[in-house]
Amino acid sequence: MSEIPILRIGRVLLVSIQVDMHDQLALALQDELTNRIVHDNARGVMIDISALEIVDSFIGRMLNNIAAMSRVLDAVTVVVGMRPAVAITLVELGLTLTGVRTALDVDRGLALVQRIMAEHGDGPAVLGDGDDAGRAG
Amino acid sequence: MSEIPILRIGRVLLVSIQVDMHDQLALALQDELTNRIVHDNARGVMIDISALEIVDSFIGRMLNNIAAMSRVLDAVTVVVGMRPAVAITLVELGLTLTGVRTALDVDRGLALVQRIMAEHGDGPAVLGDGDDAGRAG
Image (cartoon, rainbow over all chains, first blue to last red):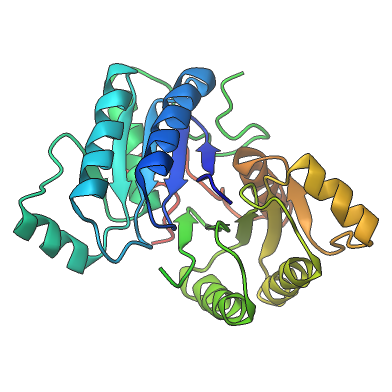
């Protein structure tokens, strides 16, 4: 289990970070994510950090990098599931994650991506019913 | 990071298994999942095993247990992201996961839960647009 799975929900890619990140894993994740944004025609990247008890400057930089890469590929990055203690530490460390959108949980993250897509005149990120839940084609 | 995050997508709970499972972690996951099904009024449980290169009898039994517990709480369990090699091994081991529904990926898993919910006369599992993506209240 050396890689982090990237799950597709409609036109949003979801990554749940559960393992300790190190340089190589972070690089592999960035590489895979950018490939998947292009391949899946994704408009949003959601990164769940609810399993993380600590977000240090390394993770903070990784989140900023992913957001910047996604942005140039026209996808919005939303960090979800941040623990209250993590928010306190981030601000104390001066890591305010500029350029990264946040949402309380996956549901609100999806809603945020949908709102941003609607502003850009895109269709829904996730279809509500029918057999194809948001598949592009 | 001793626990596996349970992510809520509308009325579906998503669990992505990325770490090595052991007895205590499996029990904690079952405990937390059943609590969340009741608390979140969930109708579906999706378990992503795309990170697993091996599914042994322990994992197979855990998946069966989760499916059985969810069923008595009126929620359907869908295993998604199974690797081809895992499917071969499962059949060779005689672990055919009876009682567990499977889908190729998260999108199709969500569609399956939605279809089952529609058959039971429920609303959509995930709303397509608007600000509240499938929140119950």
